[in-house]
Length: 128
Image 1 (cartoon, one colour):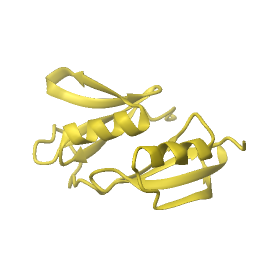
Image 2 (cartoon, rainbow, N blue to C red):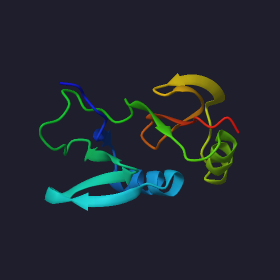
Image 3 (cartoon, helix red, strand yellow):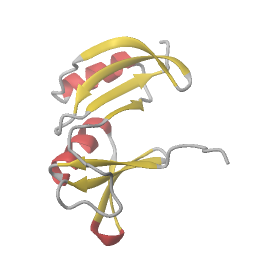
Image 4 (cartoon, rainbow, N blue to C red):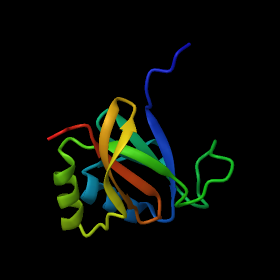
């Protein structure tokens, strides 16, 4: 067996509505409600399932804690455009632009935090 790709991952959050507002407004993700009263953030062919702290769905991580995630998302525009968009949304960049190595090679990244304190990296493989 060989794993092909990531389908989804789970973020445990303090407030689902606040999280949905942030990720849809800042990163253009679509909010999706699905079976059993669950909520997800959809983008590309992936999604982030949201669990509210204290009301997680089973099975769940052994110790789900808001603000403990660190992940990288790939943008569809050069990093200068990403940084400008984040500034317009009032999101503070805490590091970057910096060069990093991603799954497909060299990329440029900026880092910021979501409302729960998760470290979000947005990257661009574009050299423009």
